[in-house]
Each structure stands twice: as structure tokens, then as C-alpha cells.
Image (cartoon, rainbow, N blue to C red; front, side):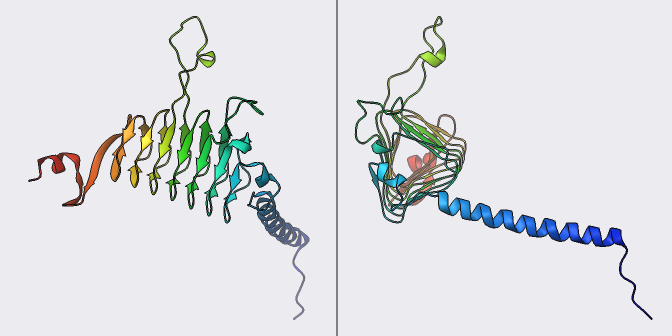
Length: 229
């Protein structure tokens, strides 16, 4: 019995499916190549614009925005994920900009879609990791003058410090003047203002300490530690 070829519509459908499969593979391969080529590493020409850019660090492509890189310092082995904004100063090419406004230490990770916007000083320590869409800034808008748009009012800037080994969950906001200690876990969606001590867990709006580490008893809720003998 002679095998008949499949009908023409079936052949067209198969061909279309094969072309779509091949096309999708080409797109994925091309996008991977684009991301690899667009990433900023310590030996790339763009890295030379930074105040410092450590060995083994990378800014993944596509990034959000890079403003006044000369005042931004990145340590070694640090990853800045895709869509991240790194900004120093009030305006592009600000003439009186200090040499060190934003600093990110060694082996840190800034999560996808996050923003670090410094006008005076943001110091992020070593081994600090953040979730996605975290916003860290040392400036904020004012609202006191009812006759002036809020966009034209600014509160005084206040330096921000985030200690070594800390973790900020998804969607955390760190406001001007925040001082986060070492080995601090900040729960997702929290808003940090003021000081958080070393070795604690904080959450909420505004973020409050809910757990602390006591060398004598280990980790415990704050109320438990206060009442422990």
C-alpha cells in the first residue's frame, strides 16, 4: 500500500509550527546575548565612569537609570539586578556634587526594579541583599506650604546607613535618616525611618522591632525578651 503525503493544510500547519519554534529559540538566544553584552562589568568602559567598581561586580542589563556615576561606588562581588536605578545628586552633571554619595559594599545584591536615590549620603554595607522593588533614598518631598505644589517642596536630606549582612524584603521603603544595623531582617512592604538596632527583625509601617537576638537566650520576640529572667 502506497503512503499518501499529508494534505497541504497539514503541511502548512507543521511548517508554521516549526518556524514559530525556531523563531522563539532565536529570540531567546538573541535576548540572552543582548543582556550579556549590555551588562556592566568592572572592565567595561561604562564602569570607568563610576567612583569605583569592584572586581566581580555586575550591573545587569537592562538597567533603569544611572545618574552621576562618578559619585557612586560599588564594591567587589556585588550584583545590581535588572531595572535598578542608581542616582546621585539633584541633577545630571551637578557641579558641586560630592565624590561619594551612594556606596554599596562587597557581595551585596540589589533586587530587580529597585532604586537607590541619594542626594547627600547612602551607605549600604557588605553582604546586604534586597528583594525586588525596594526604594532607598535620603531625600523626601515636603507639603507644608499649601500654595506650592508638593513636587516643588523638599524636606532636608538626611544620610541613610544600612549595616553589613542585612536583608530588606520585597517593596521595602527606606526613608531619609534611616539607620539600619547589622544583620537586620526587614519584612516585605515595610517602611523604615529612624534607627533599627543590630540583630533584629523589623516589620510594619513604620517598621518596628518584633524580634531581637539576645546572646543569653537566642532569638525571641521583644515582649518575651523583656520579661525573661
